[in-house]
Length: 206
Image (cartoon, rainbow, N blue to C red; front, side, top):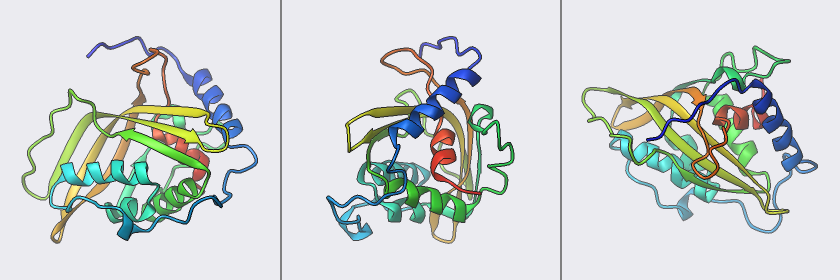
């Protein structure tokens, strides 16, 4: 995989954050009226018997705007750590204590905004580790999410490298810990993109 120079991105991240606010201006948390809320029963998910399936379930959730699928695959003991560029300059403690409840609030706020998403939750070059024991860590998996505003068809892209910890709890695997490392370059333009920390910062609350 070609590695492009990332360079300092604080200014770029601020611009992207402002762009996201404009992208959703006037309708940040307004429910869409043109379609009914998604129901988990209408979307088919993989059984949660492997980390691979759980991670793919998040992709299915994104592509269907289905909060049920996201919540079901996140551990009740979930924690999230952002990359440094996603932390708001005016609120450095924003992500402290990010847990399952905050993740749940974020994804519900996001899915009830006027958006659709396309996602590829792991890069083609990533080799999925064998699941052994009750914990597996995926190191530097790269995800790519495209979010389209259904009001005007404008698009914002997110691509990040992350370390993901999966845990087997009872009979099911869950995403236990998500650590965003750094934004990755757009495969089409080569321009640096923000991680999903920026999206969480927009739709989450503290």
